Image (cartoon, rainbow, N blue to C red; front, top):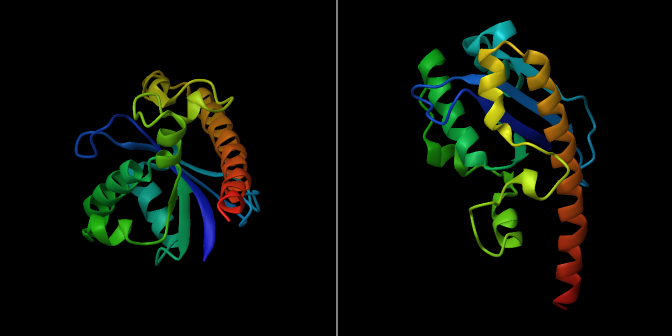
Length: 175
């Protein structure tokens, strides 16, 4: 299966009330290097329903491995919107059982076991976290959202490669 950096930006934290602002993905190789361009499906251009439909056309049978940060949040949002727009109900346990790579637990460990502060922005040059995305969206500052997403994807991939390189050293140290 192919690995894809995968992320959503949303207007809030509740999939019942809030919407997906963007859905972005980028193919990466086994070392974490990008092998394709970052694709950003934007609500302000397509609408939320069309974002879901385009995503499902591209990734028909989930024949890819999502690689991301806090994928449980993204999966819950995505499943809610898939059901809303297609009527197809996918159980969260079914989706979470597919192969995926989430760096959230690694950040928690790097943060002395604390969930508070275990954010990508605290471990990379990413800068701000996504809290401003809904503000940018409401004020139609779409260029700021795109800049944030591009920076986040770049920093995620750089950090992911760093993790892969250094975790292998731990394996070698256990022998």
